[in-house]
Length: 481
Image 1 (spheres, rainbow, N blue to C red):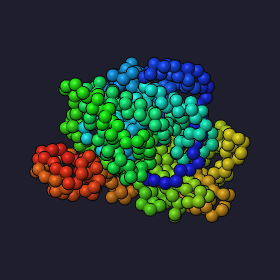
Image 2 (cartoon, rainbow, N blue to C red):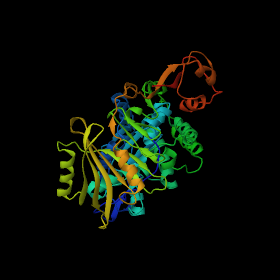
Image 3 (cartoon, rainbow, N blue to C red):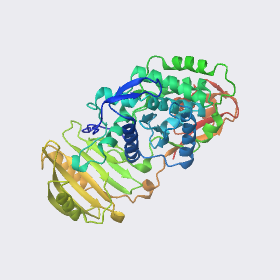
Image 4 (cartoon, one colour):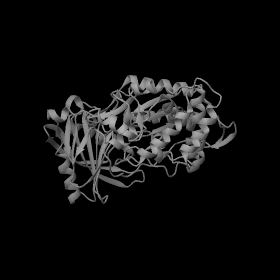
């Protein structure tokens, strides 16, 4: 989704953590921790709900089942084979994978496009499994005492408007956790060990790190790239090469399964999926939810699955648009209910027709946890079937120029009816055999019109432009939607 400013990060709080010691499943040694195994499971469960809401799961049952099957195969030979493991493909273009405590592993569709064998996938999943079995997240939470972790997600709401529990927020915060050199070294070792024990050839793994280095400078994604959250502890490719050669020594029958992996990528969505919303300048279109809105000129933008956020460049003001819970109440009655329930302290505004929809627009006052009153410009717009959109804005003061821009933007909300915009489609991966033997550059140019240039396509295939390919070798290109 669109890049932009990070607005008012939430603090991470977990209630009721107890100090104590636990046995590390990998080392067998006693480990001081503030997070028990049962609390790790709770963080994983609650965090899963938040991840799905914030980023969405990739809507391709065959891909989800395939990744899960590989993950389960690797997890069964880990130090926690009886843990209930969960492997989920996140619908995001970022090249990343991450783990939450309790056996919850996430991998983006973005990194799936850049891997080129099942053995490489097993290596990535094995690395993340290693973070869980070695309890790296629990160790980091303990070390930081939950004081300084931030979500990196925009929040413009007080406690009364929070979307997730404190535990779920902690889980989300772990997506942005940077592991230590020691943690990364151990996860690399465990990833190689687990993939090999599961029957995969670990000598495929080093090429993954070569690819990640090539793609990292081009990422610029909403979620951080793998090398941002998993900082490179030295020369990772050389280190995993040595580890994998040692692990594979004397073992026969280790599998790569390149063809099987590539065939599962046929039709994989690549890059931003415009069906989930996209910006053209300051104009935002959402084909799936069939709405559009114009945001203030020059403001920075950030688009996630759960919210669209914009901010004045000097952080004087900000806006957030979300899909509210469904309700049968009119917008004005809904605001009255918010007052009666104490979710807002006061409201001043009235009913309007916005874009042909019934709406309430005005200002609401909420009370922060420290008792400070906060004023938001607010609008609640009811569309089809009781769906309600909530738009909140905050500026220096009611009536100032930024406040007026926010209200003007709220009133630009309208239905999206343009057939061309409603029919927009994402770019996709196409897998096809090379028609001839020759240099990658020559062969790939013969495969028709493509959405990526030569350099990006070569990275996608873990090859270089002047590298030879053979006739019939499966190659990936990206085609326009």
